[in-house]
Image (cartoon, rainbow, N blue to C red):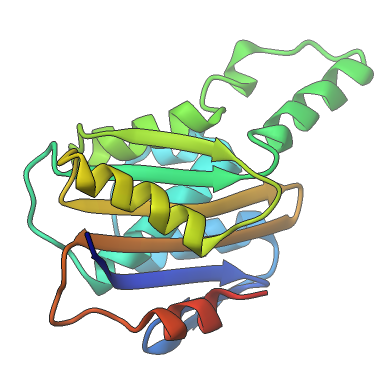
Length: 200
């Protein structure tokens, strides 16, 4: 079974890179970057503003992917596979800081946190109701991500797989996202190019 990478995106240090090169230079501050990306991509999703930064980063990253390549598929043909090393530690730490300061902590602080919210909101927005998986790993491995995608393809659980690495802690962030298709695609991007652009 083979798979094809249709597009990819890297977001780090205020830069957004797609296969054609750098498409945008934004503020390095994560909150400003997310607001600028939301405005640039011109998508409307009111719940975006309630999400934690991890979910926001995944949301804008996926929008950059779909801005570059938007496959037509049934609602159960798109799988999602995401990875990071620290789950939702950014929101957990912000929550703990409020506790340490003896401040009242509202449940709204963590309503839109956790990896399952990240994938749930993507599924709702795009009406993707296929397989989904969030993996905790020490670091991103494109090979491991592709292996998970190909397992889903082999089991006929998906025709496409979207996701990758999304990590956020305070003002440190990085997203390395991929859109892959089952089988060989004429417009596939060479694996060597993807690996080179997503490294580091």
